[in-house]
Length: 189
Image (cartoon, one colour):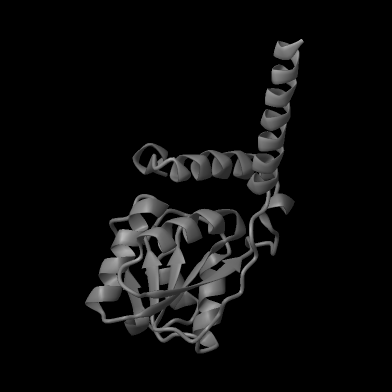
């Protein structure tokens, strides 16, 4: 009888943990913390990000745009695309070393320090934002101020409205778990 009670309690806790974890895994923020800053950082990896970053640039939120990392694949974000959208070439800084969200923060820290920037608007998609906020706030250098702005995809959709929503959910679930366990090198994108 005592064993059955302990088993029920364990099952209750496991179910509760699973429910909380599942709820957390589908909750991705839409943020618009657009504040006048030294620079706008657009992270490669999702459609709609560059367009949102250029929109903020044109509205005067920052005079410099950092592309991290620059990517010349068909879907990638790069300096030429930013110029085609109307960004002055002299206002663009490109970063080439990043291979993941984890190591991007260290490369961004270096660029901010080198250029004496103190604040940045970070632009990425909603499904990526939770991981970006976690890693950028954990490893930011000195007292940098980061503000976060979420973009939708090229169709104006949130992650759960897109055709590949299940793949996005699973990929980000795996990466968020890995990041919280400190397994950055194993989860490297």
